[in-house]
Length: 127
Image (cartoon, rainbow, N blue to C red; front, side):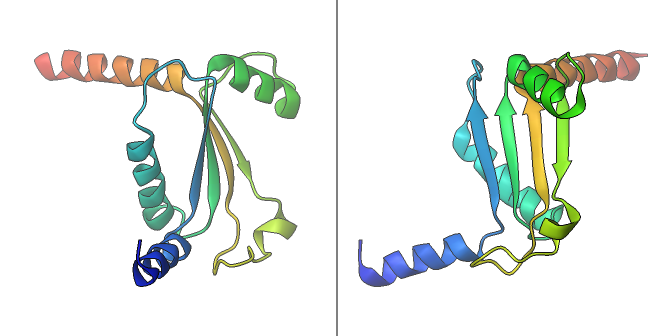
């Protein structure tokens, strides 16, 4: 890769709104590239360019996080952890935006909810 191309690539990484996606314990096939593209789009359109982290995991991990942070011993579909007020106002080194926070999503529950929503839509539109 040429030096100019490398610099352009590095500049694009710094200028793109950060949306870090972590994958943990997922048995379902996901296109990681498409998920990262979606995270960048969310970073631009929803998060206002502020960095965030999204964990895509299974029910066991969401149950563990729910128990650890909220004291609820059952899995859930989504957990959101806004950045603490002190951290939210701090600038992230090398970025022009402050930290938004973290979100954890149960992939199996999200898939089930999507199927149920599609089924409900089909039923309502057939009536």
